[in-house]
Image (cartoon, rainbow, N blue to C red; front, side):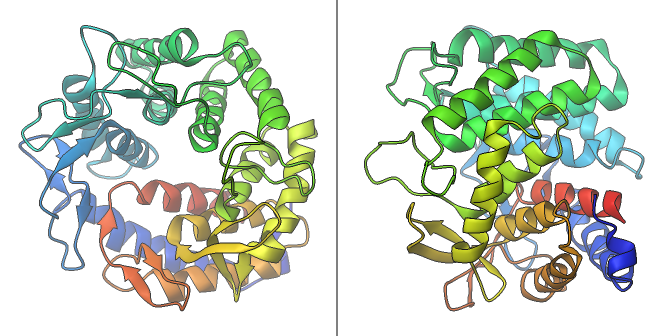
Length: 369
């Protein structure tokens, strides 16, 4: 692991500043104005004045990400109570008692809205419940974790080692096929489970998944992880996802050194060369490196920074990118979600899902310093 503190002595003080901004300017938004007390759920987003945008829906995935956020801070005042409330809300609002699994979303009144079952949602439920159970050790939390893992294995799994991205309310086949992003977060969820318990089935499923990703999603020319299976029409890759995948593989003794890790080593270099311009991570590129969307998203900046923390000899880049994150994306009142290709703020609302990315980034930086 790189010794960031020795290589860049000014890094700890800067990280303290960014961490303080997160602790004092971002997390409190979701303890105060971002929290709907009546629903016991976070609002989907706040405006720049910290007022909730008029609620149209609440997503189970957003609830699960916030469960992770407060689980990761469970020693902080009020965090344990908030995590417990989020866990209860996940079950109360989104669980499908008739068909099993969890609905994608509910409406502003709490009624099921999008009743489909999607892998992305279920992956985050596994991820959040694994971390939460690791902290509190409650049997109800582990049973929810086990139920979510069972649903993934029994409903979403395919014969080729991949998983359907979306299924109907009653688990009907919608023809969605597999998609990269839900599969990445499923790998993340499997790793989270293995971090809190030994689980031979999950370990086998994780290894099978990574082998299938190598076979079906990795572009052989540059090693990049495509968003749709190889050969799909109008395919592309996202630099942020290359960095996210690299981090998951590099940080796992189980996966480090495998074929997929080797591909993502190549993908990291290619994504950095073509997908990072003037220190900004771009949103979307063709498989050969042509920019399709130059939007700069805060989550991609955070994932690049987190991945850099595990790159040997990258301490100077870590410092530079942390400065970029602070200067471009962390105004005094919270954060900027997106800047356009010219660097202008193009999205000023603050979604409840974003603190998860900032939390995981800062946690890794703190580990390395």
